[in-house]
Image 1 (tube, each protein chain N blue to C red):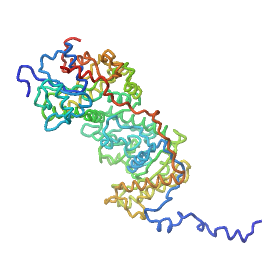
Image 2 (image 1 turned 90 degrees about the horizontal axis):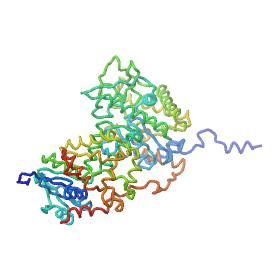
Image 3 (image 1 turned 120 degrees about the vertical axis):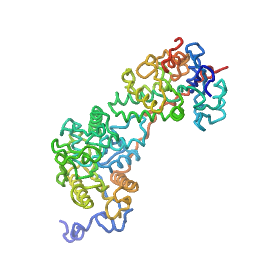
Image 4 (image 1 turned 180 degrees about the horizontal axis):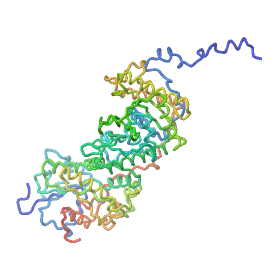
Length: 363
Length: 253
C-alpha cells in the first residue's frame, strides 16, 4: 500500500504546478525576450536532409524552400527552369519559387483544385483570359509575364504543371503548404476557383459570374483536410507540414477594414491548421506565423510597410525550424559525398591536338 | 579598313578550330578567292584573352597578343568592326552541343516543357554567356558590321578515348538518336536570338550529324583517337561548314 501522506507530498496539487518551463509565460517569453524564445515547436516527425520536400502555397512558402536548399536539405523542384535560363529571370517566370510552376496557391481549396485537376478531376478548367493577343491562365495569371503565345502553349503549360504536381505528390516525403488567404474568387458557372480576382492582372471582371467568398474555419479545415487526404491517397507515406503566411492581405473585398479582415483571415487559417495538426499524426503545424507576427517580436521582422517580411525574419523563422528539428531528433547525420557516385564533368578539353592550329598557320 | 580592291575583306576569327578552316583552304577544299581573307585568333588558352575594348577586339596579355598577331598575316593585334567588310566567328568557345544535349534531355527524357518566351530567354542567355558571341553582337548590333557565327561543332562520335564524350552521352542519353526534326526548334531558337542582334548563326550541316547530337567520325581529325580529341574537326568538315555559310558552295569536298 502506498502511504497516502507521502503520495500527497509528491503529486502535483493541480495540473499547472509541474509543467515544463515553456508552459509559463514569464520564463518562456517575458524573461527570455524575443531573441531567446525557444521550444516554440515540438515537431511530430523528423525531416531528414535526404527527404524530398515539396513546398507550395502563399508567397511566404518560397522562403522555406530556399532555406532548406541553403541548409543542404532536399527541397525538390519538379518543374525546373529550362537549361541556361538565367537565375535572375527565374522568379519572373515562376521557376524555382515553389516545387512546381503554379505560382502562389493562397487557399487550401485552390491546392485541392490543383491536385484534382492534375489527376483529371475537378471543375472545367478550360477557361483562359485574352489580353492584347496573348493568353493568360486564370489559375496563375502572372506565371508567364507576357502571356502565352496561343492556346496550344497555354494547354501545354498546364499539362506540364499537372505532370509536375503528380510527380511531386507521388515522390515527395514531406509536403509543406503555407496557407495564405481565406478570401477567394470563383466562377459561378464552372466553380473554378481563380488565383486572384479577374481583371486585376488579366481577365475581365463580371459581377454576375465572378463570385467572392470568404472561407470560415470549418471550410478551411475541410478543404485542407481534403487536399491532405488527396495527397495521402496518392502517396500513403507522405507527411504534411502546414504553416500560415504572416503576410497581411494586400486588399480585402469583404467590406471590412483590411486590418480586421487580415486578423479574421489569419485567425481562421491558424485555427484550422492547429486543428488539423491535432487530428492527424501525419500533419504538423510549424509556427512561422507566430514568430513573425506575435507582439513579443514587436513587429521587428516587418518592413516599414508592416506587410513585407524582412530577410532577418525569414532567417529567424528557419533557425527555429532547424533548431527544433535538432532538439527533437538530434542533429542530422549527413552522408559523406562520394565523388565516384557523382563524377564531375571532365574539364573541357583544350586537347592536345591544338597543334593543328599551329600547323595550319605555320609559315 | 575594308579592302580597297574589288574583293571584299573577310576576317575569320576563332580559337583552335580555325586551323581546320585554314587547312581546308590550303588543301583546296574551300574556295575563298572571292575574298581578301584574314584569319585572326589563337589557341584556347590565349584565345581567352580576347576582349572588346576601345570599340575594337583587343588581346589582354602580351603573350596572347603575339599569338594573335602571328596567325594574322598582316600581324594585326587589334581589329575593329569597321576594319573588315565581313566577319565570320568560327568556334568561339560556344559549345552548342551542351545546349542541344540539355534541352533534348529535358524535353524528351524528362518530359518537360517550356514556352517559346522561356526558350528564347534560355537561348539568349546561352549565346551571351560566350564572350566571343558578345563581341560579335556588339560588332553587328552596335556598329552595323556584317557578322556570321559558327558555334563549336558537336563532339565527334566514336572517339572512345575522350572522357568528355562519354560524360556527354551519360548526361544526356535522351538526346542520343534524336532526329533533325527534334533539333529544329532548338536551332530556330538560337537563330532567332542571334538574329535579334543582327548575327547570322550558321547551323552545323545535317549531313555531318549522327546519333542526334554527335558529329560523324568521318569528320574526325587525323589522330583523334590517339589524341582523345572529340572536339576538333577535319578540314573537310570546315569546308562543308563554310559551304553552308550564306549558301556558299565548297570548291570540292
